[in-house]
Image 1 (cartoon, one colour):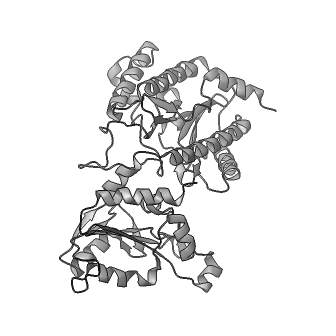
Image 2 (tube, one colour):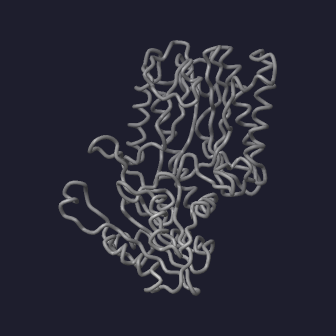
Image 3 (tube, helix red, strand yellow):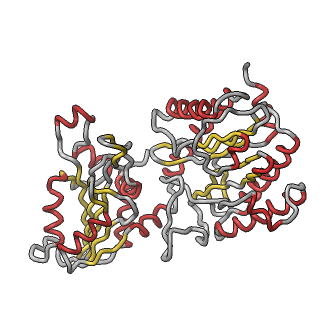
Length: 430
């Protein structure tokens, strides 16, 4: 588990990216309405969590940088016996301080007063401040009816002398490079993913329903990671369903000659594994399936050989597309290389971490295609072929840790060699 001193170090680095005479407000968020009086399961804002380790809605972080000083305050919900009897215990200020390493922990009932002393030019408790940073990512809700983007407009009306800046880009830059402890969390998520995937393969058979396989994975994950759940909704797609990239409705019956594409992952302390394997329902790949599978497998291995500091995801995409096109023409799947977009139509890679698709904000947009990879980044490696005309969908996905000289395949222990997969499926107890 990540300790308080690491959260403190992250905040210190963020202070170094803030302007002088500035402050930042970051909100943990609140649960969103699902329907009527039902709330969706609460998910902490990952940027807030990255800086505090606090996983409780309604929490707020305040950072102040002025006149050479760095001050930090954490606000948590006050004790409310009635609500605790309904919804469970809240963090005490002492618990929040121990987790985050922030000594000044106050109750949210005092938040607005503290903001007034911070921003009101007649009070100036912290000197003359000219800039307030907010996380202006989409859908960060402060309360039922207010997002940070709406809050920005309210601040500008009340304190017109304050300039509002988006702190999202700075935090996502910090999140690019994973610490030793973050990598350990990723390894734990991957180990759980492997164990649960093997459990899922144990029940794989023709005539089983896709959702039965997805349910088995979910149950096995929660048994292994103490109910921390999935990194994302499992994609369990058999036969032609696997030619849909994000197949959403696992209601189909697995056919006797189907391949089953399993795109899935566990999470551990919010760090996410993202793995895909494609296996034969009857235990053996047909000749055509094996030919296509081995093309994807060799491409997956090729990407891992090229993934190293300095290369960009755009370059990895170009390598992937060229290789798949050439091999599909050689195998007779395509007549022309230019037609590869019929079979491969997504990026081969994305960043992974606290989000399954970890964000990175360039000055132009949220793209990371042209970002040169650096040691400490974790990316996916996921080539695929989606051959709707042949009823075959294949994707093989690994998680790569970029090192000083190349990469480490973090998911190397999750078998993907077709002979090894067939051997495993044949060895299961009937």
